Length: 407
Image (cartoon, rainbow, N blue to C red; front, side, top):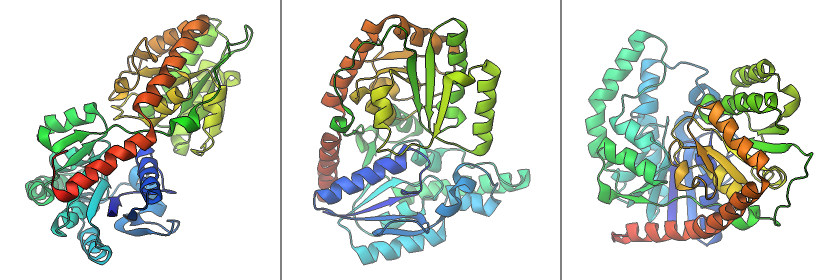
């Protein structure tokens, strides 16, 4: 197949798992001898074969995606609504590349213009929704914080006026949702059930799997792992608060934090570490490359995944499961579709450090339970979330979209 992927960011420009998953899928399809092009925002460090033409500056991604600068009303509209520059650039590239199928992966803050351009190209289009970007763009109230309240009112008016036109112009069908949870979000927004297929992500389970885990030495601390972007929605502050409760109750425990965030948030998180008095029980490792995180999955005992936002369907718990780790996660979003409470892990309410500490304490005091959950998690990951099977399902969906067949 000759395919063109259209997305907002692309590695090495990373904000979350969306970009890494898109990159993994593109590379897997190329390895299967498909011709794959990528269209995304502009960046000086993009690799060959990636066309950085959309009106979004990836070299200043922190300003756009992490809110370090407030845009004007017109900039806000172009981010969330329609960018004429991105529309024209996408139309030109699609005409030049002449793909058999266009896959729109994620356009959050890249406007909906590339999706309109893909529709106007006359080629079949598959739209991926790994989060709420499309529902927010077509039906949401829209907008990030803008420069002034007056600018906010203008941007909101422009978005409200243009959304009916954008809904007609995009006609996003078929849609591939990353989880049943995300599909339900889109159904509630007004999308048709028949238009949305659920294809949950996969991970290379064999790359994460390892030898059977031995019982923990009696005097050894329980090693907890937090892996992910450091921002409030991911809940690292909840993990630190829970750690404080465990340490004060006499549980020998240590937390490895793998990930990075804005300097302001990291400073705030370190302040909580100091406030809880757990500085000697926490190690900040900063950003850890995807190829290096396996050593933490294999050496640590329990993954804590305290996400507070509606996690669509995260790869980190699935990777840890494949490595045979016991997982303590929250019930937010699509995580319960991977982690089954009491069977392949433990689930707790989001934003509740007491519940998180209690679940971790259960595993600290019951090594048999911890090992049983980890072994069951590894089996579940291998059976349901193998990456090659995931790509097989995507290939089949793409082929059916090209011929107009119903999956």
